[in-house]
Length: 219
Image (tube, rainbow, N blue to C red; front, side):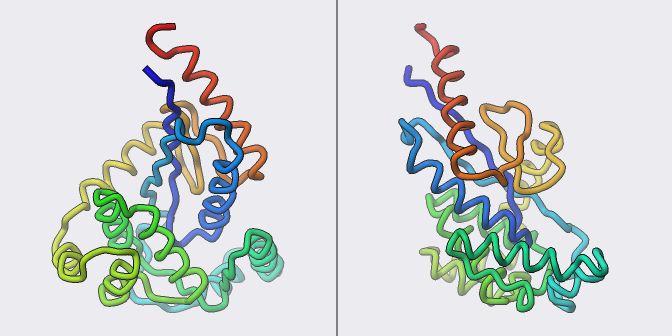
């Protein structure tokens, strides 16, 4: 049996570091010796499950509320890190909202082989374009742009489909000791920060592959 490494990465649409980590992981995978042996799965994790569905303050304003005088510097730190990865994150446009439905949409996409495309649209829409990802109409547009069927998206968002998958990811995260995003686990092992350099992430994945080879049946 071919050795594989299961790389589970817990992310949330609200988290700019999740988008930055996504780019770094993608860059790491380019340099991994056997990328076909890495099974990358984005996992749902609500950073702020009590967030209302209607937007109010911008993310930058919220960070100023949390961090006081250090808030502006943290916003610029994130913007600088994002630019280094080619991302146009703008926390002065992004307005935090509840992301449970966004996670349900992602889970729908993942089931259809479009998980990465849906997640990319959600992250870009919220963090770069300032879209309200708590609005079903916005989610429908983003889902369609990622390749999902509009009528199916509307049906999902009108009900509770995929809620169990979101909650299952979050329950598994708690069992694994994940308490924030972006976080990675390899083959169900202990959580590590996914917000590392692409070189460090590549080494983690290579180490995971080596460990998988040692324990693969038939060795």
